[in-house]
Length: 255
Image 1 (cartoon, helix red, strand yellow):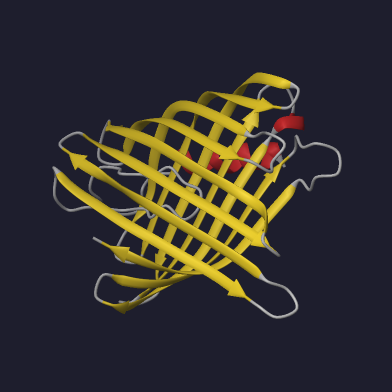
Image 2: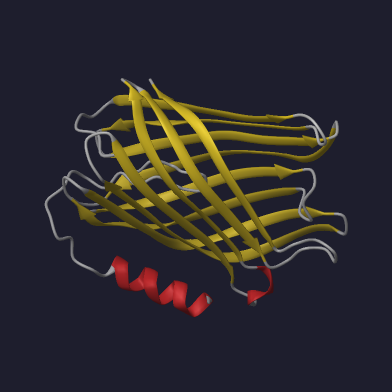
């Protein structure tokens, strides 16, 4: 699986762009980072997403999620940010509590390429790794950019530092990512984001993350989004699942 992911990313990074575009403005991903293509420099953008599930009867369940994302485009680059959380309780007992913050900076090299640097901090109270700090830097290639399709890919080395019950561990990784966005019509968009942090010392610690989403405009600046997210972590404690999935419906407000 690792070799397939690396081959795919290297192939896409070497592909020539099939249409003219602005400078590459890729987003770091997981949980539906939008791939944006702003037409003006020195401009801010921001979007807030909220969702909740409440059930009663034989089983009482509550879950809440929220996300704030956006960035600043300036002459020569883009600075992106992300903050998100997810909590879930069953019968008033919390069984999911996680949040994440991140920053990414792109410095444009040409019309279709840029460098990137990423910093992410994730905390998950119920995971094997309760805290994970990730830093990576490398190259971003814009593969497609036209009226209907926008597709970026990232690749570069990095370091992941995890905190577990047994202690802390540093890992050298290769960070690869793909962000694909397809505009079905004026109001509906499909988006697929895939990220892999591949451990250079073996595949026992690889982490794969993806989100597939379909969003439709409800009114101006307000969208409804259906999303399926998955995370595969090869290094978990005995008795814990390696694959976590989440299906959600949420509202997204674009400022």
